[in-house]
Amino acid sequence: MFTGIVEELGTVEAVEDQGDAIRLTIRAATVLEDAGLGDSISVNGCCLTVAERTGETWTADVMQETLDKTSLLGVRPGDRVNLERAVTADKRLGGHIVQGHVDGVGHVVRRTASEHWEVVEISLPADQHGGLGRYLVDKGSITVDGVSLTVVEAGPESFTVSLIPETLARTTLGSRAPGDRVNLEADILAKHVEKLLAHRSEVRD
Image (cartoon, rainbow, N blue to C red; front, side):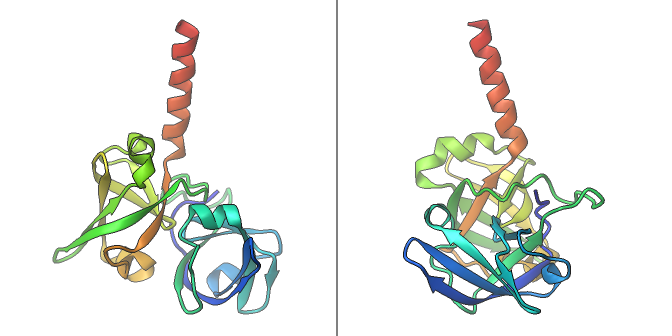
């Protein structure tokens, strides 16, 4: 489990094509301070497992299923990525509960700069307008590329978020341009509420 508070920007060091998977090696510092084999690290919102590590890099195996459903498909050496270690019980939950299980890939539609922040509009996956959209509410939570954000306005096909200078400077969202792909994860609490209400309705029927 994660909080959506990015700890550092890592750099993709190598991508090894294995046909139906890739071996992804990332250069990092903070997330390697206490990382061991088998530990979980969020990469742009995708929960990956440490398979190898050195003093300055770590490697994960990324399966085809993950490549098909996330923006990790197409990553190249030199790309910057958002990194966060799995949360521990003694840490503050500064963002919201994030599983690292991407629900779909959206696209940056437009960026509107203000003096102290930017409003960014992000599209919902074309085949999931009714899917992910039903979990979004104004002032609710959404994870974009592993970053915990508050929804400003939830629409049927897109939503907006406001990015403060800290987020712009410390995450990949500061450089995402219109058309760029971003990983989206809806609030797990909304999913549980939906299922419980559906079950309650079935029992009544």
